[in-house]
Length: 200
Image 1 (cartoon, rainbow, N blue to C red):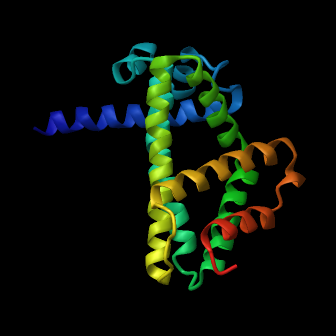
Image 2: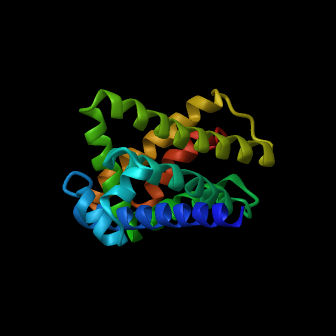
């Protein structure tokens, strides 16, 4: 029993090391240019070790998304949970969005690069769409939670609001990456206030 637990621990550690290495290689090289060989070298593992855990480079990236999405959602909840007003929550959410985008632009660029690759591959497209739906669901949960806590009625279905806010975040991120001055925080705050706070 002890030996089996040790083997499972080694497998878990190897998988974690491969994912950490893949994140670094993808960020440095870009998704399309990164190779399995570069990932295993960065992880200090064999190619066989990678294929024991993942079928392809695509699956490695999808696993990274599966790790990142819950952390992403939790980080937003943590930022807005202490704000007692909708205005404060909107400002906190946008401030966090801007910090993630400005401090870790390679993460967003990599996500966009993978998005582009998925649009050209029908099988990968479905896998990517599933993960993006999880992002929208996380946004929906955040909106519903804020509305309930602040006793604010929503005049649109929560899922629709989640999709709209996610689309705004994606679109503004593209513009801000290309030209940081084109999307000041206040612009995003104004857009969210117009959408969510019907009192303004």
